[in-house]
Length: 210
Image (tube, rainbow, N blue to C red; front, side, top):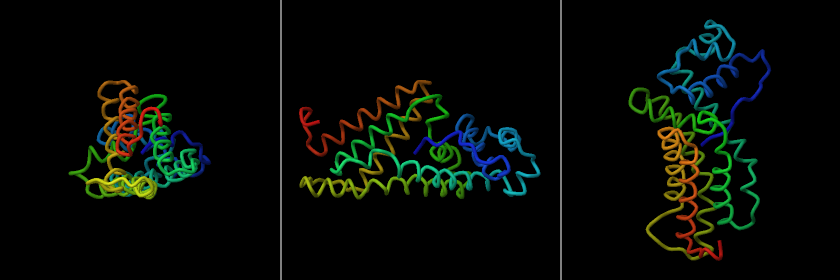
C-alpha cells in the first residue's frame, strides 16, 4: 500500500504531526535509522511532547502503522478504479491506478508498512502485526471483485480470490524493493505491467480484448 503523504493538519495537533512525520521520515530512512529526534524535528514538536503521546519508539511504530491503515483506507476507497461496472475491469483499473501513483521520490510512493515489516518482523512483533493488519486489510478489499470476476467468467484453477489478492500485494511490495535497490521508480512500474499481463492471462483475456 502506498501514497498518502504531506498532509497539513492543524499545527496544534502534535500527535498527528508526529504520526505524519514518522510516516515520511521512516519511508525515507527506514525504521531503525530513524530516531525520536528525527521525528520530533520533522514534526516541529519537543521530545517531551513525543513521550506524552507515545511511550517509546516502538509504540510510535505501531501507531504509525495504524495511522497508515486509516489514511490509506480513505485514499483507496475514493479512488477511480472502483468506477467500472465490470469487476474484472475494476481489478485491472486497480493495477493501473497503483502504477499511476508511482510518482515523485522513492519515499513518496513506497509503502510505510511494507518498509517497517521488512525491518522489524523479528525484532518487534507488535509493529510487525500492525503492519500485517494494514497490508492484509487492504488486500481483502480486492477479494470480492476477484471472486465475482472468476465466477462470472467460469474461471477454474488451483487458485483463490484470496491468493490472487495477496499476489497483487506481493508484486507491488516487491516492485518497491526493486525500485529502492535500483534507485529507479520505473522498476516498480514494470512490475505492475507484468501483473496486469498475468491477471489478463488468468482470465483468458486476449490482447485484442484488452
